[in-house]
Length: 514
Image (cartoon, helix red, strand yellow):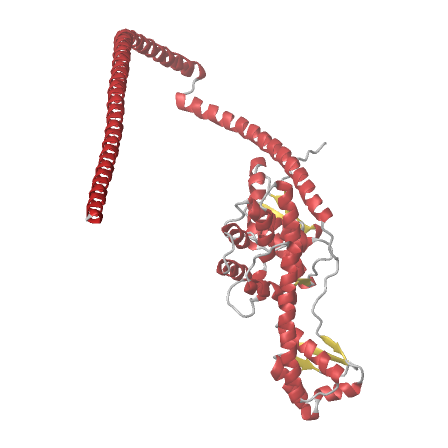
């Protein structure tokens, strides 16, 4: 019993303790929740206070900025009003000035009108007095006004002719001296800087044979080796009684070169028969084509003219097998290009264009056996085809004083370089018949002009002396005649260098003493 009571008591104590503990814990949790709530409320209050403060500051700042903007706007408006006021004042002053000037102009116009009227009156009076004086002069001189005018014009014309003649002579002499001096300096410098051989190689057509037996082998049985060789090369082989020599004949120098090379290889090899001939001719063609390309490349490299089309370089190389009056055309073109470059550097012209024009001025001669037209036309067509500059095409077109004559510095340089290269001693050879014909043509051109009594070509065709009939041509006329003869020679003839036209008018008077 006692034990049961004890248990009940302890159970009641445990329950009391549990309740107390639970109540205590609940109170503690409630206190902590209240504290957390108070903290959250305080933080929220602080944030609200900060937001209100910032909002107040923003409102104050916005008001201050609006005030500043309003002040600036009012200040700018005031400045604009001031400027407008100043502009209005200036415009008003200009209007006043214009009004004053208009009044002054009106006054001046009135004065001018009055002066014009007075001048007209004076002019009429002067004309009246001059007419009276002319009538008096005509009565005194016993000559009409027209007769006096004709006499005066004749005297004036005679005096003017003498003055003009003197001026022309003075100007011509001065200009000629200055131009010749300058030209001598420039050309002399170019010639001095460029040195070339005085003897020019020409393509040989003669092949030397070691023995007469080799000549028989070249001919072959019943001449079949010669026939095979001529069919393969397109040239003629001439075998005469001259010992140890075979002559190659053909109009095409490239074919002659191929035939020469093939024949030399055949003679060196010793095996001469149709199949071997065809084999070596094909090999010679390839070698010559390679040589042509190499010659063109060397010419371009020597002149520092890089960037030219490959096909154009090959055409330039073909000039190696062309000659004119014994002068190799490729060497002549290279020499002309060197001289043109030096002339261009002396006068400040374009160096590349001058060299190109001189190099290509005779390039048509590489094709003139294969195409129709003069070598000048062919040269121009080649330059156009391969996109050469217009200045180069123009220089090629007028290279031999055609198509209206030279117009630019490149034209004159190209022509001068060509003439220097062609006319230097040892550059070319000319047959006696051509030489005599050229001299005769010079004299015939001069004698065909009216008033010419006779003409002589002297100094190897470098000068033409023209004697005129003094009664038909006066001193002023001989100057005109010399220029006309020179132009006719330039137009109708081709010649190296220059030709001087010297017109002579001579009057003789005789007296007899008795």
